[in-house]
Image (cartoon, rainbow, N blue to C red; front, side):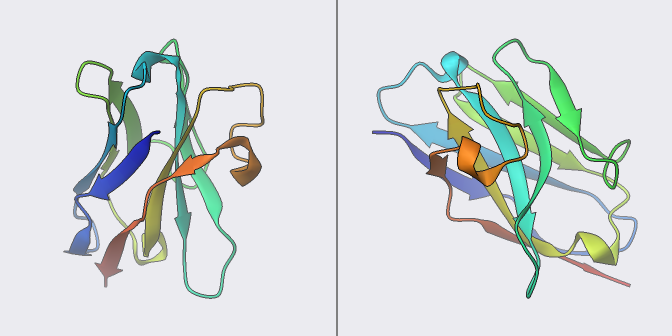
Length: 125
C-alpha cells in the first residue's frame, strides 16, 4: 500500500519561491509510477499543475510554465515541485498524486488513484 505525504508549503510574498516535496512510502517500485501535482483554490475545481512520467519527461500547464518545475528522485521516492516567481493566483492547496497505470490523461484527477493530504501555499501581494 502506497502513501504520499506532501511538505514544504507555507506563506510567501509575490515573487518568492517555495519547493514542495512529496514522499512516497510503502513497498513499491517508485520508478514505475507516473506522478503529478494538482492544486485547488477555495471554491474552485481541482486542477492539474505539472506531471512527470516514468522516463522523467515533464509537462506543466501554461499558467505555471517557466515558473514551476517538477522533478523526481526515484532513490528517495520523492517528487518535487519547485515554484518560483509566485503570484497571488497560485494560492491553493497543493496535492501530489501517483498511479502505476500511466495510460490516463496527465491532468485528469481520475488518472491517479493515490493522493497525498495536501500542503497549503499562500502567496500575498
